[in-house]
Amino acid sequence: MLLSKFGWRFMLEVTVKQALEGEADTKDHYLYLCRDGTTVFYVGRSTAPLERLYEHLGRGDFTNRPSPLGKLILNHMPHSLAWIMQFMTIADCESLVQQYRPEYYEWYIQQTNRYLAREAAEVAEEALIDHYQPYLNIAGNRAGLALPEKYRKPPQWGQGEEKQRWQQGG
Image (cartoon, rainbow, N blue to C red):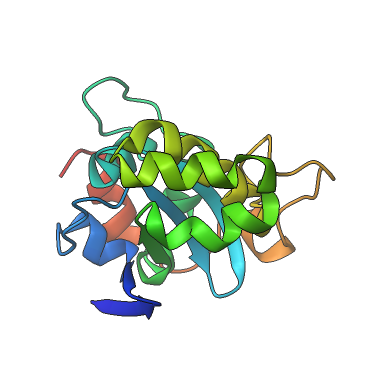
């Protein structure tokens, strides 16, 4: 598990596998993104981001269908287990809010100081999407960019046991 210092705040980075194994304490980390190197697939927000990852995989309490992110992770197992999940606090996103949503910046700081996470997280998510322009966020992919070629089709190698385990609910 990697902790990256971001000023006096902390962003948490773990592999998808570590996140799925519960090796991350995501308390107060309401924003997340999934990436492989510099390729950012998705940015999201949740009060329970690890549970949300399971929902993306079709294994949550409310859905049994994988989201586009979940399908991408499942189709690229076991290699996708090494992809990175970044979990951010609202404070981690302050500079991006200032850069991409300056009209909300003062309000954002007030919300953070009042611990009104839900309202501030929405603005932070928009700033993250504007910054990273993830491929699988419909709102963030304004140019309609397709995933890089290597992610468009499931690889023909090594999906085997790990993918089957997830599809069978194991």
